[in-house]
Length: 113
Length: 115
Image (cartoon, rainbow over all chains, first blue to last red; front, side, top):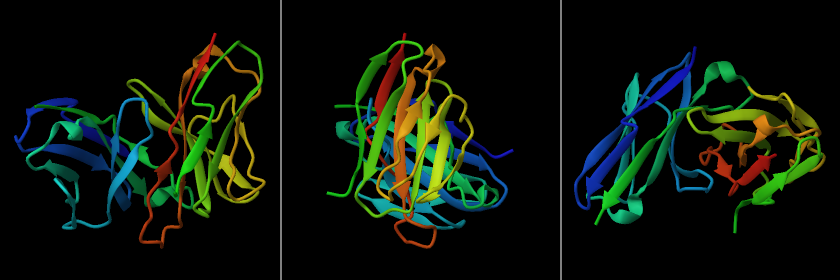
């Protein structure tokens, strides 16, 4: 069964304290792995798509990496405005034409000034 | 501005009273989908649509209906809402798999309470 597990559930950092969020996945043929940011009461905001092991993508203080079993979202020198829930999702080849994503429960990140 | 627009943002209704949540996108996306988000359960797909007049069930379709008569619109219909449909609902759309910008764009959400 396709599954996505994110850890930790919650993370509190001081401003400038770098860290990483983990997304472990089990999927029958990965078509893509997605990272989203979600602010309270709002829709998820697309960050990255990764397609194959070894791939990396960066955007400002965020860098996403992918292996055959997991993905990391590295946050370098975070600022308070990076506080949000970060969601990971995978798209399985078995989904066929349905672009249904299998979602993790997210990591709630709080960055203190 | 490229976006997915959902209405209403908040809705409180009574059990059994039919309601429709509208969703519209201005990006010419073929694919649209509805999700509900519940604490501890994450995002779960309700229905999806590959294109006009093509819809299919997701993981939790019971109690919901959808239609796709135009490419830009994908309304979610609750014929007889029940309290277990109290949730945060999101509409999302995307380009096809071959597009380098493949990734969902989500609406701002509709918080539905059924009493």
